[in-house]
Image (cartoon, rainbow, N blue to C red; front, top):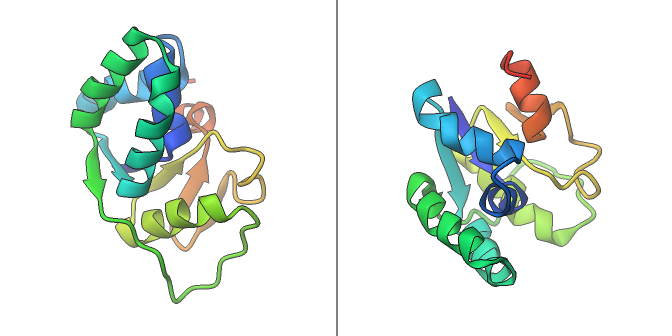
Amino acid sequence: MKIFLDSSVILSACGSTKSLSRLITEIAGERRWNLFSAAYCRAETGKNIIKFNQEGVSNWKILEAKIEWLPNALTTKRPLLLTASKDKPVLISALVAKPDVLLTLDARDLALLLNTEVYGVFVTTPRDFLIREGLG
């Protein structure tokens, strides 16, 4: 299964050993889940990780190596209705990558898309994803 991680999920996985985002990244290999994200999310994570303690920064270095980083996709021929411009490169990059699921913790800006399919990509939170996978 191809899983595209939003930077919010990556930051959560780095910042807390008890987060569901962290659980997903830790069991990905044994579940045969391939983790993907965009260069945009990598840069956004790198910019925000400096606010974390040393353990969070160390976790980022480990997780960074587990994720396949894809080039940013900035345009699509498909119409998208998003109010927050910061979410457009994430969603467009995910659509181009064609994952099975896009995981995000951005419930405010992506509220209308959560637990729906957007052009074949299911958008959900780590919690809802784990429940769908029978792990919640």
